[in-house]
Length: 271
Ligand code: 13P
Ligand code: ZN
Image (cartoon, rainbow, N blue to C red):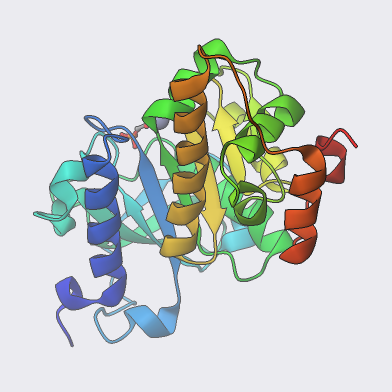
């Protein structure tokens, strides 16, 4: 058996959480990530028949029964993942009846998966239905996206349009726009269900005055998606109080989307 601490999926999780911490997005225990791992990726490192303990999920996750997820722990700090992956991460398998998670590795101090795991699994289920290659769900508290929430209407069309105007590449990176939820209590099945509903349409969902959810095929793609939204929000917040002299026009956004061949939300432009 190879040492799991050398597994590429652990390395990726360590690098990503460290990056996000250093960007200032994940203060204290803020943020959580779940990463769908193929059995064939985990097998060289783990005896998959050995379950350490079983943890109830609190909802029916049977559409992803048998699937493995590497997930951050509740109350754990992103800044500590790289130094102690086994204490801060867990590799779990959703049980055959979809009611619980079987811990195969990690959470070594007796901890458990993030309080947002229902929202993650519901989002995985929603994204897998539209993109069978989706593997990552990421929740974080990016500073400028959050700042924008306080000075801008929580409206999907308006917010997407403004973000698209902020950087030339935005419409290419998130042509589907951003979904927006009002402030809701986190860590509940209700916010999980509302997020998953949005995830049918959007790969980025803003949780009003809390943070953002992103989904994608790879860790890089998902991180890059949130990073691009955050960059756009940063430009917005840095310029919101100043007279706007120039902007990218809607016909230019259309030209961009057509040149890059992306399927964008045409109803989010005013043409
Ligand atoms: P956890 O510590 O349970 O992952 O919660 C962090 C968070 O960001 C809640 O939304
Ligand atoms: Zn949060």
